[in-house]
Image 1: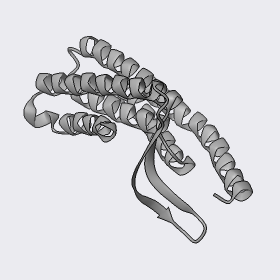
Image 2: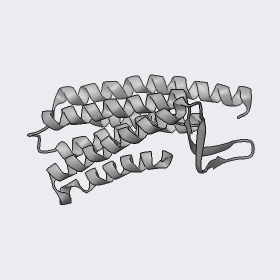
Image 3: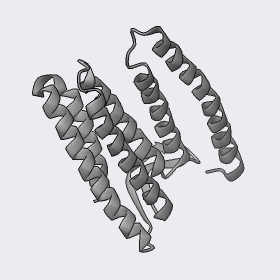
Length: 189
């Protein structure tokens, strides 16, 4: 059930990427259906975590250096599962609102693809088990926020706002770099 969560998001992203061939409306409706399942399973995970169970799902070894061992894994406790449920529920509401708002836009499949990728990285950010994985998810959120801000790329103001967001995001990245390096130097892990 814990990995099924992210399979729904990956399926939503895949459907968006295949949207040109399966049709715009069917693409969006399938994407919304997968997000509804995503919210439902996150509710079940939150319920299970509320019963005081903590779970770590290790997928694979990511970085193996002499002293550093980083696995790509998900960590579910009460806080992370509640945030995961909140992120998925708000993302579903944003998707539903965007379905009506972007109704007449010819590139709405591209927008929903960006939105699904953003949801994926936000979910990964919440359940990350290591700082390196958290940094990877942080960068994914930054890239997709740039893509969402610059969705109407023919508009000058959209380009300017997207570049401003990237510039400000670099300051946050510097703080995160510094924190990860200090943590590595101090704790050796």
